[in-house]
Image (cartoon, rainbow, N blue to C red; front, side, top):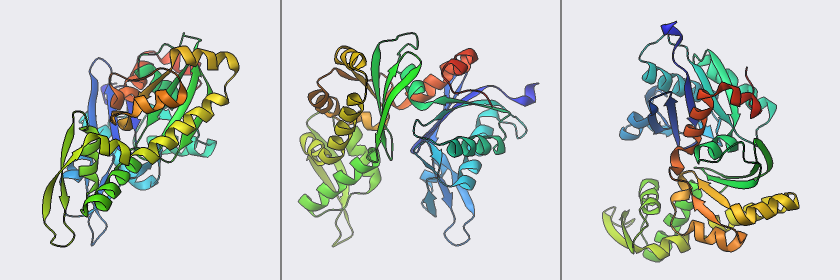
Length: 324
């Protein structure tokens, strides 16, 4: 039985993959990236190892919580599972999140890839419900509440009531769009080029007054330190933030009146990497006219929620994720 493997919960995100083990918590948190050799195309690294290696081409095989490149995603998932189990023949039961806008074909593809990556059994849980559970919301609470999950390549909005998703919305503006907006601002205002890593750092560390980044001078090729006021970073991210706020408002408008009234009191919780952007909560509060708070562990909410489902397998059926 030992070789069958432990039960695992996997948050397969576009930016990062996290694996939760019962009684241990999150034991793996690595970028969802695969490094391939430029010349041969052969895979030379996964996750943190791939990010540290600058000698090849990086591929991000996950988009919107679903495999965008099935073969690379399968190999990456298998690598992460074996890294956690330390045994090539371990076949764990796996709990994963299913995006709310996925099709039956998407669901089948996700299941197939998980099985091909050596999972023994696959349980799928609605992504919004996993995020809500990880943020501390209770499935027994029938009042309306909203989860806004800002991932690498998209923002997903869901209004929940108890164990049901009542309304959803999404926009193709996530953390990556905010990074690009910050980079465009630096190029326009300072004539310098900011790579994605530095833009991400600026977004995450924009807390007090100013943030220092390293940008490249396109004329000389040299790097320079640049000090940016935090307010400028928030202003640069204005367009993606406005799109997220508008999508959240449209989602509220699709809700029954009694749930919309609940939201006015209960408000929304922000999860995902994009939730770390300074000023986002304030902007959403102004647009939605409701309380907006950031989850205590926004990056880990989905993994924590899936872990909770793993510990209560009866909960999975009630959340309509089902068993395959």
